[in-house]
Image 1 (spheres, rainbow, N blue to C red):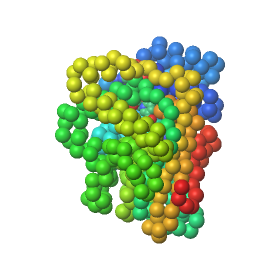
Image 2 (image 1 turned 135 degrees about the horizontal axis):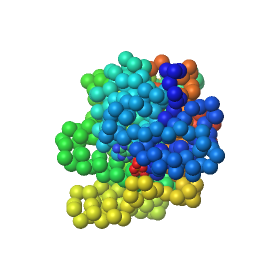
Image 3 (image 1 turned 60 degrees about the vertical axis):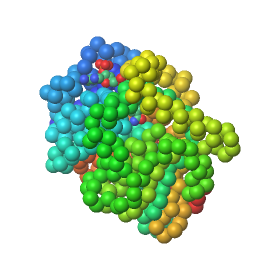
Image 4 (image 1 turned 90 degrees about the vertical axis):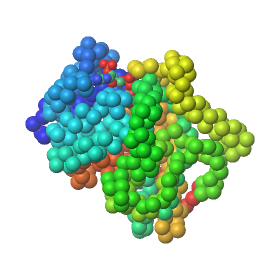
Length: 412
Ligand SMILES: NC(=O)c1ccc[n+]([C@@H]2O[C@H](COP(=O)([O-])OP(=O)(O)OC[C@H]3O[C@@H](n4cnc5c(N)ncnc54)[C@H](OP(=O)(O)O)[C@@H]3O)[C@@H](O)[C@H]2O)c1
């Protein structure tokens, strides 16, 4: 691996999120880390480099197109880590996973597409295990706060002399201020189209253990349906509404639990919701948000509303500007009950737009962690999750970069 030309290649650097990740790396990666920006258009890549002034001069450039597997294989064999923001991943991602799994190259991405992750596991987990590649999906807002939040909580419990085994845990989004980019909208709509056209995709999306390493071993806790309406939650002692990323994050956390030998609990009931503020205002907000999410999804099932939504929403390459990203933030709380009957909680906080400011930070640190912290990482390879691939080493990095991951005993 040390004979490779690059330590880290960022594929998709010309996209909206890719350029933010490149900018973050230009400001925070140590100078000795050999980084190249990759994409399908040389002039666009040079433009991204130039936009960082002197700090961009350190980057090499590489050309690759995911519809040309040989070009992706050539990139994967030249680098120790390949970080990709080329999405929708269900459309463009699998050749990149394949190339990294075969070449023993560590990989990280920003996907939130369960059907793509299932294909990646089924197709390339065994190969990646044999070559030593860590293939790590969901290294952005979905699903690092959930995945590393639960890890932080169970590690804290173990440090307190408890087993760390949970009976129940619910992540409540307390604050979420941010926006969507065109690429995220395209990935969401692509997932809906695939689900409409293909029953097997609908089956994966409806399965609480969609990403399980061994489906037959998972506990039978019923359908564990993600919340779809406003509802009072006794465990949280709060009114709640759906959380848009729950159907992805819960699957990732359940995969982490299974890959860790059910270290979070053999019969863990894990959920994600939005917690509403007390009073009528909170309920109205929850109702409007739930209806808005439903309308966005429903718009894709009828020709005229589909065209209208696609005209009004951001296009690929577009997203929130710097002022909007700086004004964003998120705060989450994971409430848990251990198998011993104790209550404990974790807090996860990010201080800029979750999907772009904080996501650029999370993905950049995931990539740097794979490239620089190998000796401190759990000894695992294959298609992994952030918690199982990088664990508390990544938590420490993100704390150092200004994010909060804290845990304490007791309920809210
Ligand atoms: N998990 C999270 O929290 C999170 C947050 C943000 C984004 N995302 C995900 O990240 C992905 C990118 O989002 P975005 O808004 O940055 O999208 P975007 O602006 O549309 O960028 C897409 C990138 O993919 C490249 N690309 C497209 N087809 C390609 C191909 N065949 N070969 C090589 N490159 C190709 C584009 O290159 P050109 O410039 O040449 O067109 C561009 O660099 C989406 O899947 C989105 O859902 C996730």
